[in-house]
Length: 316
Image 1 (cartoon, helix red, strand yellow):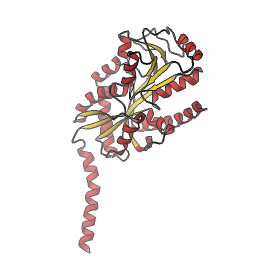
Image 2 (spheres, one colour):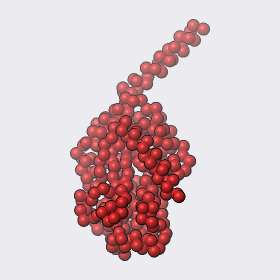
Image 3 (tube, one colour):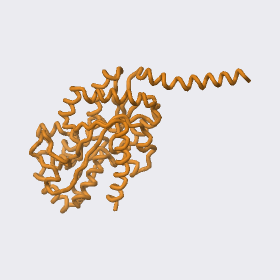
Image 4 (cartoon, helix red, strand yellow):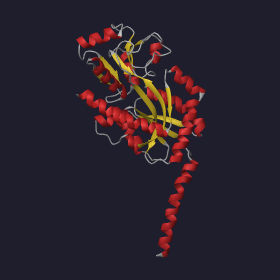
């Protein structure tokens, strides 16, 4: 009997000391970032660039894995179910606080530990440069006279840019025909091929095609104009009081040890501050916006509440 008690106490002691020891040794292998969308979208491009600079500060490689499907539900579900050891992170974007209000999901933002927010950038509508609509007014006038005739692509039903398009409908009194894709990259490919009329995106998605003259910004949902495109006015400047965008950060499964979260945060913050990443962000017209774990957690909580109210209003 005494022997069994001693074995039990020893097992408990080993369990208690093993957690901080594991955290102290972290990382001993590569860290994976799950992107819940197809390759080529804004989130994918941003975190591939960040992974490339962060590995040197973390001491191990950071790799990106795309897990598209279900409007991001596939990737977030896999990220939630991962071992809470710091080796599997997930890119947390607005849909994490949107989709649970629209469909039954296995998760909410509460099933994750916030690590760091990296970006907060405005959304926009892009058209082909040879589009018949030369201005936002022409675009919206046609939409009002022809409900559901303008096809607007997005990175997935229920995603952030889809909700932006729905909210813009409500703000302007028009009706678009929304076409979902498996990510921002495929939606941009579709508009380049002439398969849709417009696409709702974030700056990294399609901005190179804007620079090349293949696409044009017809609606910019920002507080101020892009420095790279000073001649493109915001929709607010054109009399429509509408500003909306996307935040993008990293989360870990619930229960990941605090000191592991700190190591991850510190390494990714150094990766964010790296001159190579900052140049890449500037080239992609990305608005860097750092938030630590506590502030990022508060942002997700407030956004969850905001989108819940917004979706109820849109459905009315």
